[in-house]
Length: 395
Image (cartoon, rainbow, N blue to C red; front, side, top):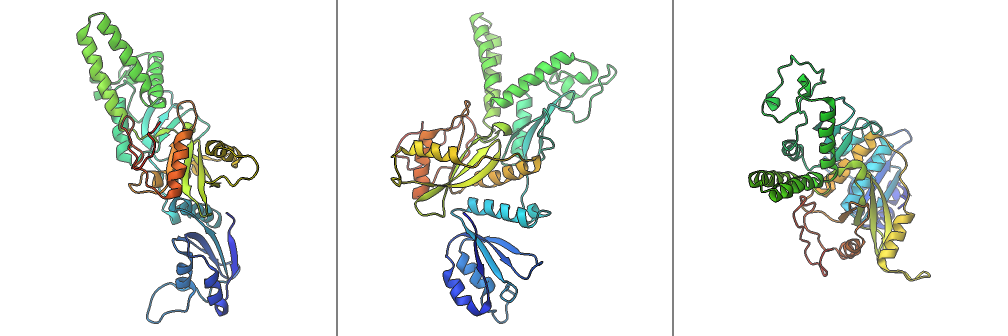
């Protein structure tokens, strides 16, 4: 939605206030040329501007900009998510040097598999240094503590190094506690060949890419083989390792995917009557909003809601190339909304084939439009998420 611009003068304040909608919005107040604008969001545009631009009250320290403001620009929003998104874009344009500080936008915790190092390792970070390198990022996680717990329990299943310095393999190097406990292949003192270490890194990468499915299948196949060969003790040990895999994977939120594969659709209430707002998620980056009319307006051919949703998504603007810093900011905005206990709107991620769950989206559009609440999300992998007031079962 394009911003609405209004000239302001104290003499006409009553008429101006009467013309303002009492709805959520992001607004910008400007004074004389060259001055710094005032940008913020409000749940009630009219009431907020009456406080800022109305007649000053005696014996109060409340901010009053009545004599400084010359113009008002505002954009109506349909949800807090949309308000934060529009506010982010506005502050980024108006204050390119410190907009993240003004938003108090803290980067989300991610797991980085550093494949650019000669001896790769995985660790938790809040930074993305280079999108053109070999390294892979997984997230977002709700907190650094949850990311570190997931990664620590996951690395216990492998023998990849955990030290944080650049290795220069030397047979005289004493190693560390992990090599002594046989929990690391110890490339630091040539305890393995480079090929063996590379193969272990590939196993870790597949584990992170598939949310643990690759390791689950590997252990299940070995357990079945051991059982068929009557090696019951070995089968029992493999079963115990499978339980550790499941315990580690269940700590990973559904949203914590490889960033370049983090795709989906966010459905939010819209400022336009009779509509919901679509925000697309593509490789971790957000775009939108795209208004979507819930009822078919009968303009020409009549299509099912699923067909109309696909048509709306196909016509949405494509994302231009962006750098690492912008991706970090989009992930931070997404994480701030998605991990709330109480939140408005729903998110639908693509499956392993890159397809959106269209039947669930249709029902989700209806719920968001009616203002019904979705259950707490995202649930850890492997746990069933119950949604209240569903008229149909989940797919």
